[in-house]
Image 1 (tube, rainbow, N blue to C red):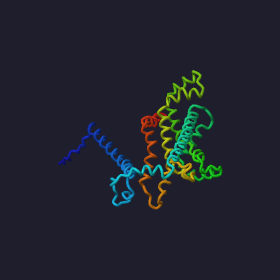
Image 2 (image 1 turned 45 degrees about the vertical axis):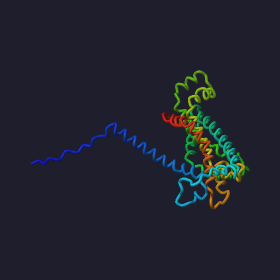
Image 3 (image 1 turned 180 degrees about the vertical axis):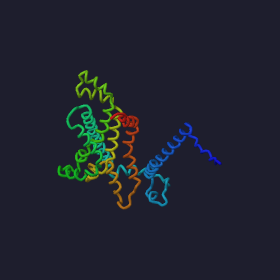
Image 4 (image 1 turned 30 degrees about the vertical axis):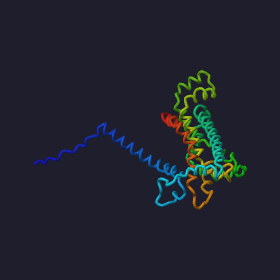
Length: 293
């Protein structure tokens, strides 16, 4: 006598439309999570920059000011030499970014298009430098700059920040993705290294160079630890360091966060505008070197 077993329950596969709908829902859920994580602190900074001091320290927290105080922005720019901080930030960011950009392009060009012994070893050293946190080199750099007498000077801030490992890595990967036929054709036409770089390589590398420039500008604009260690006073302090000084102006034990948040927004605006204007080129440039190399 045979016993019949129940037929196996078959799971009906999802249709293409159902899979697409699930992916869309997950995408929107992820965007909402990112918006909350990023947007809530930003909203709090904006609202706090318009609050009176009693509204900042009240419990429970006040999410909408009872009275608006736009004078916080005037306090942020007058209690300390805000425009000196801005000038110092522009100088440091501009010089360091320019040096990093030039060194990154030339070093990547040498690693890709020039032939010399030890090229692989040099690239491995550059990769190793990417793995070392900047904080590890602070003590040695500080001792060297102090011996040179560059403390509390702009060159003491600028020179140690000019390392370019990330830019060399990024530009090298992009140069490797360029069509080899175009490079060989230019060499057959008699192009020397400078003509090859300026007439062939760089015109095909616009988005990647923009990405490199934007990443460098943002990183240098937000640099805090090294300028903080080098600046003894407001004369050479950058904007991130100036915000720390602003935090301790009136009463170090009870910070008036209104002017500090106002200064934070003023510090964010210039680099935020640069990023928004160039973000399309930046995203395209960061992904252009992923095909080859």
